[in-house]
Length: 129
Image (cartoon, rainbow, N blue to C red; front, side, top):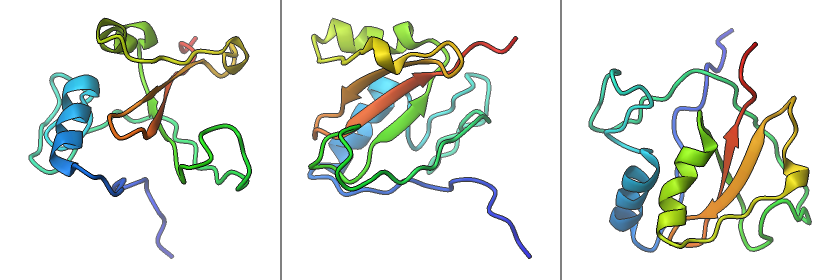
């Protein structure tokens, strides 16, 4: 029997796909032609990610963990939350941080939204010991 080895893509509808692709590449370094490792391979159609944990979790339909008018929330694993948030701060964009989200055993969290209002959770896992 074969085994699923990971997520191969994340597809969603957008009013302006080209503009949103550019925003994700420029703001977060995510998307086609990007690599999580500066020295890593860059491919035209894919994003080369770093290996690590991925949480796959359906939520109750009435969850208030992310906006009720959205069917999903993208969670991106980051290595330096403050550095990743810097461009959002410089642009004066909303950043949501709540003390109750952070846990030394799980990591630090922040929320931002892309230009089309899609929620993005940024997660900095705890440093490995």
